[in-house]
Image (tube, rainbow, N blue to C red; front, side):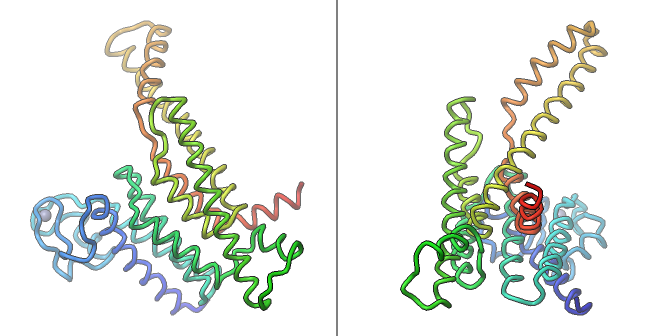
Length: 307
Ligand SMILES: [Zn+2]
């Protein structure tokens, strides 16, 4: 890794992270991400160019607006840093290549979608649909190397040159990942709606999974869904336990209930809290999708090596 290129990639990541912050705030509100320029969310004061330097401005101003001293969420600095590190990770894994571009685009979109979902419970089409299109198109140039590429060439020969056939197989793989990922989430959402009577997953999650599938192919799509469900379940369980313990304490000390009664009543209210609480599942899909893209291949190889 060339240190100068690494630094350049890092700064590039900071700038793209800064643009992501604009997208995270504006896309769910239906605003343009191009104009007007950035303004303070509290006083509306236009942010001056020298106060708009990624990461540095936030640190120098201590997370506050220069005019009104209103608090600027650390999310701005966090998103910029994560994007910068993700871009460096792409460069470390793939060098300066088209694969790095694919990796960086996926990281950029997923970081944006994770934070948008966490803040607004929305996954904007303006990120997922262009992402899906990019994933399908780039598969013609970067092999997805999944089941279609592994199995189809042995089954039948396409009447095209070998150089073009791998591109078609790779495209099938991207298509398969997108289709299976989307159907899986759509099916799970329909079952969840019947079972719990509330919408657990929306079409945003379906489109997000289609996008991830087009980048990673079928096997890593399944891995992403499994890992997300597991992470989501742990998070849900942890939330219920935390609410239960907190409310038991409150019932004991504020309402002076006996231990067993406090535990029983707190358990009932923790259940209600879980039912009302909508989990932003896109956060899990996005982060596990990114994990699968970086480490999934190694994990699968390790797993098949053991089994
Ligand atoms: Zn302000």
